[in-house]
Image (cartoon, rainbow, N blue to C red; front, side, top):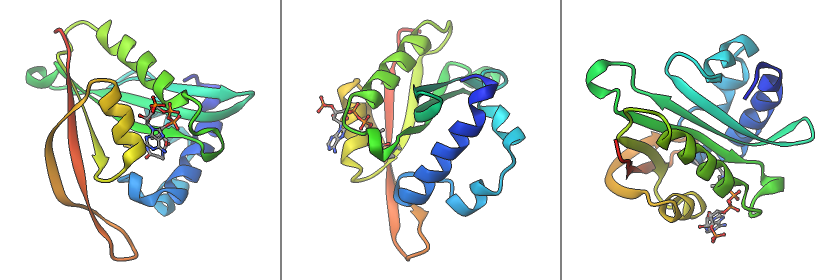
Length: 164
Ligand SMILES: CC(C)(COP(=O)(O)OP(=O)(O)OC[C@H]1O[C@@H](n2cnc3c(N)ncnc32)[C@H](O)[C@@H]1OP(=O)(O)O)[C@@H](O)C(=O)NCCC(=O)NCCS
């Protein structure tokens, strides 16, 4: 993702956080108030290895971010966060294409040995996507997120081992 895409990225993220509160840890109300400058942390640099976006014209319709652990002892571990495809564009292979492109980048990054993510238990679309790419469940955190409507949802913890 490049700086000019930040506004469209925020628009997609705000819509997804609002429309799918059970799928994300961040809440829509807090994130909507964030200023655009704070989204620069999603550009490559610092702990962020990359954010990939899928574009339909100038509209961002899909995104995926990868963050690497900064501390020396855990620099072999990176995490996928913020996987999302706009409701209008789901089921067309965009999520799979984003994940495949992300995995290509991760595998080309020296020193990475493990890639993790967390996904709300029961999110069939996302879990199907990750399992199809070789991720395996290594744990489960019960009561991981609490929604305003009172639901308490667990998260499956998933792992992909790399060659590093
Ligand atoms: C999960 C998500 C990113 C998938 O994106 P997508 O572009 O619709 O997915 P694709 O069309 O590339 O499908 C890839 C695979 O995902 C799985 N999948 C996608 N939609 C599915 C559905 N409705 N039910 C079951 N599996 C599904 C399948 O394994 C599919 O592979 P297949 O087509 O060979 O069966 C998208 O549904 C989304 O943004 N959901 C809301 C936010 C979210 O849950 N994000 C994940 C946070 S961890």
